[in-house]
Image (cartoon, rainbow, N blue to C red):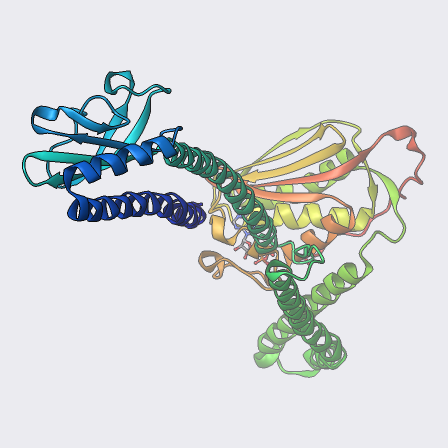
Length: 456
Ligand code: ADP
């Protein structure tokens, strides 16, 4: 705005200088020329000659554009179209401006005049001037135009500046907001382009391509780990079975070692299975055969199963379950999810801790919440624990493979729910929201028998 205003100011200033300045110069030159002419007359014809030339000129200019006053000592008029010597004008060489009004014997409207004095030897003085009303009028006109021009320019520049910076700020804001969401884990989002091909569009395209590349690389890494799990599962199973077979034939001194090896192979196999299961759930994206499930009952069942584990650690497991809350989905996977959350709560809460398990209806959702008084998860790790194999540093000494919450995340996503981790001060609170269904909606009900969970 400032730059624009300065440019316009310079431009208008130049126009002012070029027009009004030129006109003032012209006026001065005309006066100068008249003085030179009259001085010549004086030289040639003396005072009387000068008087008659002045009279002649006054007679030729009835409108009084040119002003003359030739006075003797004490300003006594000898000739000219003014009656009085203006008080503003000194009887010495030089330029003067003075008001032209009736006190000087002027018959028209009061104007401004400009004059030059020519001192004639012998105490006489000659004033030659011009009515500069037109010049002043033009000057005023240009000044007014400059004032208006500047005002309008400032208003337009301010408006234009605000609009431009607003639209720029808005586009940057969009990029900022979307990048924030992407950083929060929504990698599928992309920055919209306007299609104008401007710098912002190019920036958006570059960022989007960068994101595509990142997603591609991440997918690649995930595939590699899933493929490793897939390819190693069969030889590992064979190895485990052979070890188990060996267990029968080895002597008692090796039996413990072989049994440990079998347990470790089991652990490895369960990790591989969990990995493959997550991969399958994520590629499937939705529940294959959804059935209506009484989630309240499922929560009771899971609590019953984990009560003993909690008791072993002298932990209190509090239940607050609204009856008859229904959801639609895969019963085994939801039970697995509950088991993983409870297993974590018990594992990461020290002895004598408290675990609150609640299930309530919240608008269109059923909210399951597992809150413990354990070590909790620092804010910067709350998103990361849903990644495969991610374990928070302080809990790495405890058993686990870092796949439990990845599975929970995949199950929640395929059930169109959402999961939130927050601080329970102390401990962790996991809130899980699943879309609720009413009993009447007529989904096929889940069959009763269910296999026992194994984590992951
Ligand atoms: P793990 O087999 O290690 O328990 P999970 O995927 O279930 O794997 O959890 C990932 C990480 O999240 C854990 O290693 C732990 O650091 C953290 N975590 C999960 N649940 C809790 C909890 N209730 N309290 C504290 N930390 C937790």
